[in-house]
Length: 154
Image (cartoon, rainbow, N blue to C red; front, top):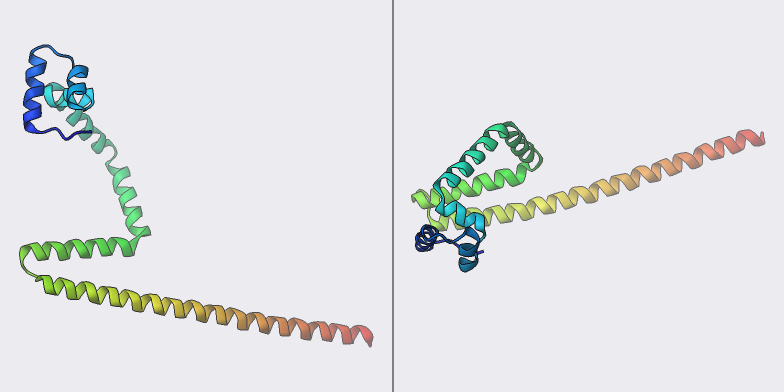
């Protein structure tokens, strides 16, 4: 779909005044008839805006709930987005320099690598603990079998 510029909108309005249909205008500019209707008919535009506002009002709780659930499920991603957007706004405000941003991001990446290494070590340790527990259980099971076997023989 083509982007509709102000010049194209003026041309569309002029063509509508001349009596051309939405479909013919849409074909000429490579847009949908609804786009032509939206840009040329103020009543249609107001109706679409009112429908959107009504939908947003009716589904506000649902939208808020889904956003809240997403933030709870993806805490790290959410905080990362918040931090990066705050950093970006501070950069535009001139509170932080580009070099400061570069240093912060470098530190973040290094910390991320350290976190990944720590989590990998923890996973390895968990596997080792599981193997140790499993071998202890196997030894215990063998001891129990021996005791049962010696009691059955006597």
